[in-house]
Image (cartoon, rainbow, N blue to C red; front, side, top):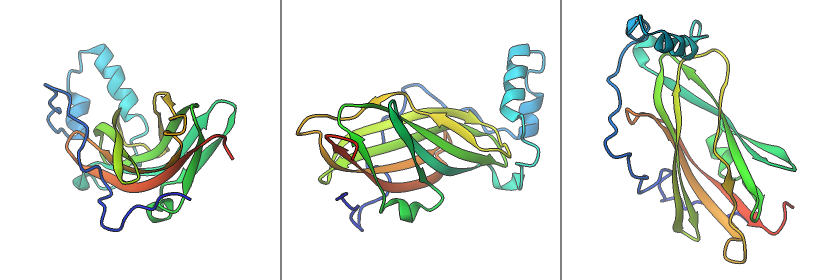
Length: 199
């Protein structure tokens, strides 16, 4: 049975992964300002066109700033059917548990939507706990995303599941999405179990 998060535990990591030394987020600019910047730079112009492609209709209220809405997480492992969990109901996610076979390689695909403005330097951050002890911390840089009417996706690098007697068991993950400006878009706790086999 999956380990349930304690009621008094924070849903976000108590100690966030360290920031990249020397990195400073770019100054905030409006969509119009970004479109007009460095118009003579052809490669930058193409990048901006790609970033802002499909923005029409996704800018609902520019005064609110960027909004990122997570839709679902999909666990992908070779030789196994993908398993998807809905992120639109984060309370229900606490009761759900992924089962991962020990030692396998897997990736997580994150599906989300962006509205109103560009989300700069989007990060997926998580702290993994086993029996109440933090055993792993991750900060995955997802990149910058412009507002679009359609869903957008990011797939994490390949990860290895723990293995052996000490690796097996129930884990609680505390996750969140945050951007360069420290805007937090979602925070939640979820569970996974490492077992000898998938079932």
